[in-house]
Amino acid sequence: MSNKLIDKFGREINYLRLSITEHCNYRCFYCRDDEHTPNCKREDILSYEDIQRIVRLFAELGVSKVRLTGGEPLIRRGIVKIARLISSVPGITDMPLSTNAHLLGKFADKLHKNGVNRVNISIDSLIPEKFEKITRGGDVHEVIKGIDAAIASGMSPIKINAVAMRGINDDEIESMIDFAIEKGIDIRFIETMPIGNAGIEALTQHMSEQAIFAKISQHLEGRLLPLISKKTDGPASNYKIKDTNTTVGIISAVSNHFCQTCNRVRLTTKGDLILCLGQEDAISLKDAVRSDLSDDEIKQMIMDAINKKPEKHEFNTVVDNISNRQMVEIGG
Image (cartoon, rainbow, N blue to C red; front, side, top):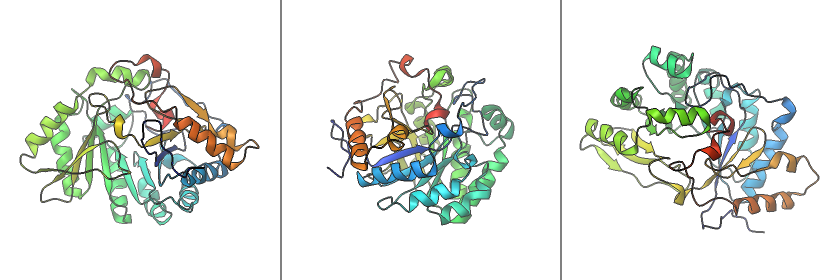
């Protein structure tokens, strides 16, 4: 059995995004419908043992990077234990965290000591009233405390992610870049993605990669130095800002396909392996690891699933096939 996951388009899959909870303490309007409430019973979600076994099997198939996501992963009971279990799996060399950072002040040091080496933090505005409106109740001051705690813990790199939205926060692109430079951290701007009805509706505020880059380049005229992505990097186009410790990037899922270099799959809280954000295809690894299937049989299931990974998403032409999902349910 091969120890690498390579799909039929020749892409090597070495990155697993692992959602450990569907719940979130924020309710960002582009992420989930206002009335949406996660429907997760304890027996429905992956246990510690399920998570450790699945990660081990992926590691044996060549995956080296596991990102902890949600929902908001820091509200999952046992988050530090989960980090410790995953980081102890041979072959896992990179375990980043995606979080809204509201609780990161409490957990940053413990998580870093248990294998979380870096963190991506969602922050769509630096203006308290606007931030509260976007997140439906969030507190930007707590998020900034979380950013500072991550810096103090030694996590590196630290990236802040902002969904760029026309008429919402497009007037803050420059100030958020300056904030990142001041903190000595990285920043990425993300196009809105049509995942779930909330994401589809948010396309009315969509800012294209071209429009975002125009603002960035005008603000940083002559200071942008293009960077070459590493093997396990995400889909951002990144630039070093001259004479700073900061990089700036754009993730353009809608206006510019990055599918040809896609190296990831997603595992939901309920154990469904999702092959592409823009497709409905999924298989249940939770059922597999709770059955009497052997490790080799489950690894064959994973390899068979990877072979069905589509060549590309259809965000820019088709949204109906993904309108029944909430971004909060699939780990972003």
